[in-house]
Image 1 (cartoon, helix red, strand yellow):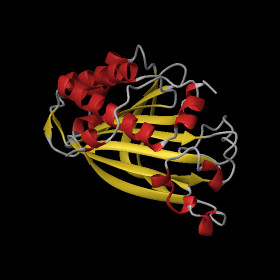
Image 2 (cartoon, rainbow, N blue to C red; image 1 turned 135 degrees about the vertical axis):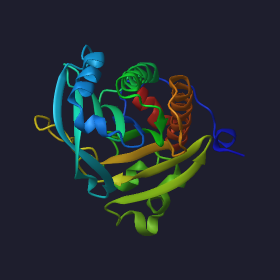
Image 3 (cartoon, rainbow, N blue to C red; image 1 turned 90 degrees about the vertical axis):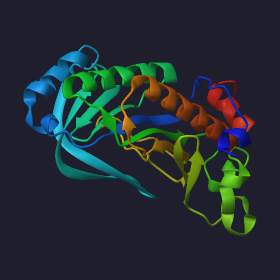
Length: 268
């Protein structure tokens, strides 16, 4: 029995106070050296997506890891190309072995998937991308509530099974931060759920001109992925990512109370 059969199923709804601070989809593939060495091919790729992503910056590939202090970045030696829209809301990152789409202004799955598949189609045409090694879809939720300024205050808002020690009076009033990571089997892959009470700041950082959010929040970081090698096929990717989106949303809704959901929806 898989998690789809055991979790309550919810139809995704747009939230007025959406807690998604970062949405990322990534496809990794066997290294294509021409992405690093053939500027003509990279220029060809840029022309295919330059309309929605006119700004280009060249840097180095970055690897991310999560700790209690937030998401840590480590720079790798490979070049990466970042293509950004004019409002700095969407970023396409291309390296020798991966392509990713990310946004800090997520609206809904349809827009996200349409943008992603357009970028993948451009990479297939420009670099003859044919085999994927891993695909992943990740939503990082930082949930803030005006009445939840202490760890104990999250009890009416977050499912008790997730809260763990925060639900126990013997220890809860002494906790200053809490985190847990779960590995979950899902249809066509796995899902990593990282969650916990974070006292300040943001796990994803902010742009230099933006002030970090104030106060504590509850993190629900859901990362669905499949590391099975297969042919890159846009129809398969669309079905797979939409399946991940439904599973992630169901886990998100399972993890929060109806009261918190109504607040995020804007009904409260």
